Length: 217
Image 1: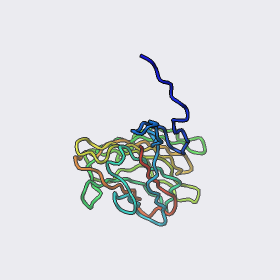
Image 2 (image 1 turned 90 degrees about the vertical axis):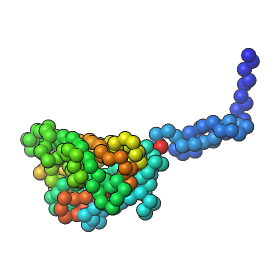
Image 3 (image 1 turned 180 degrees about the horizontal axis):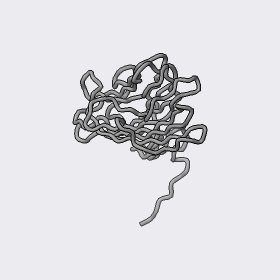
């Protein structure tokens, strides 16, 4: 069988930012399309003395449905008004953030004076079939001007009505004159789709910082 040599001029290879080449049905056979695994910006919320920051599908340009199989939340320098925990909870079709969750949490910490080396699980941080909010910090984060929290949370396939909805978070924050690193993982044990995610403080408010939502193509 003879092989036909493609002519370079017959291919559209004009580069486009964040795009890849894909096949199409036209004569040249290629076009630019979304690159697999690309992060798609959806919404950024900026804290300003807020007790809660909520991402609700269909509200304020938020997408949290079957459009993406994975969603990523990025926390950037969240600073609190008082020493408090940062929590997350999920809405499964009603108006309340009370999706049933089973989770596990572990943390490490180290102080600036080179003391308190610690890796442990903290009682009360893990949940077993609970509708309560999940802490994503192992301890009360500080309220000093140079304190704060940064990190990331992944939520997988929230629109599924067959499987549980897995999530995990990794946060890093300064408290008690030291570094705290907290790992949380679990799942929403519900058949309904998760259509909203809410981050909150256990007391006081989030005075500054941002939480940005992305979809993974």
